[in-house]
Image (cartoon, rainbow over all chains, first blue to last red; front, side, top):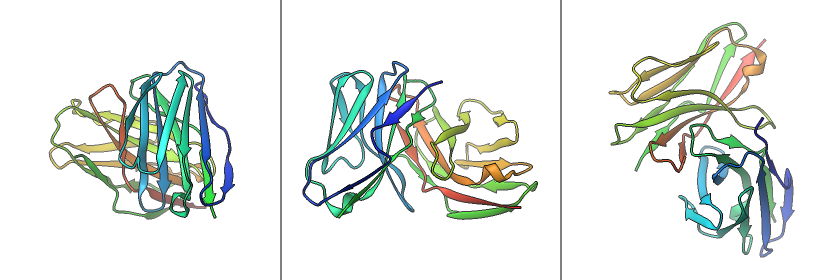
Length: 111
Length: 115
């Protein structure tokens, strides 16, 4: 079975802190994604990566950056966390096929 | 740009009954894929069912089936013989035919199953 793991289930950070969210997949998938999930808005794509060191902006990249140094790991970085970044963050991966596999999510609270 | 709309924020169904969740989308493409994903409370999102736009036949997976109306850009999910374990948030999603695998999600519908 494909496994996508995220570094934390719950995270509480202060405004202005630098925040790292990590995602690891074990199936040699080429493509990885970061979404944020907010009530009434569904999932919105922040960034995605289609290969090591390659990345593309999604629909809401402002305030975020990403890093993919190894194929299995895709990190989301909040350079200076703000309260409007309080949300659920979901990582997903796929090999370019038809199904995305999701991690359990990280619920981030910025106070 | 493509959009996906789920107009039912919440639905409820009696155990063993049938429920239909609605989804509409907007696209100018002719080749694409549509999905329904399920997110149980505090659990990971999983794929329920997939439909290729070029296929006229509606997809089915056990108790789950879709009604795909390409001209109307409608993609509803029917759950038959509802079970308590079907309680979850359901997301409709659209994927283009490009190989990036990017998905566009609807707002989600929370399904409650009453015993």
